[in-house]
Length: 119
Image 1 (cartoon, rainbow, N blue to C red):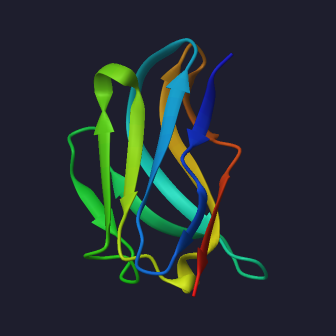
Image 2 (image 1 turned 30 degrees about the vertical axis):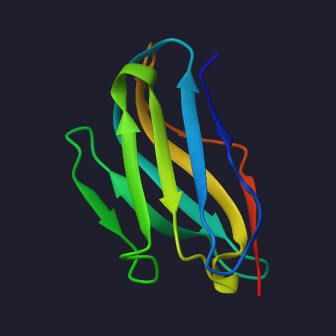
Image 3 (image 1 turned 60 degrees about the vertical axis):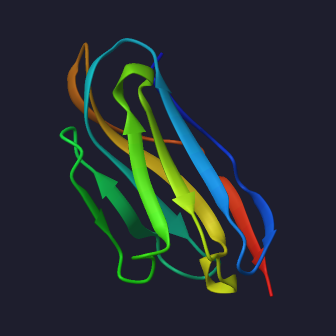
């Protein structure tokens, strides 16, 4: 069974840092883009950061210069290093990936991890 499992969320004070991880497991042939989304209470889910299979990255304007996305292809894992956190970064963070599995190209989501930034 293919799944994405996130870890690393928690409670941190403003200005602090957290590192999120997301590991893909199961019968996976390859992984295309890996992404991080977030959803704050009462708001729509928004794209935070993208990393392609070749390592190209893109970020939402709200996190540029503070967040860094990276991946370890050998471990099928994507990371999100979050620095200089602000209360407005509080949200559930979701990992998303395009995986090539036995049935072809499929899009998967993790279960989400809560990030809370206190002022």
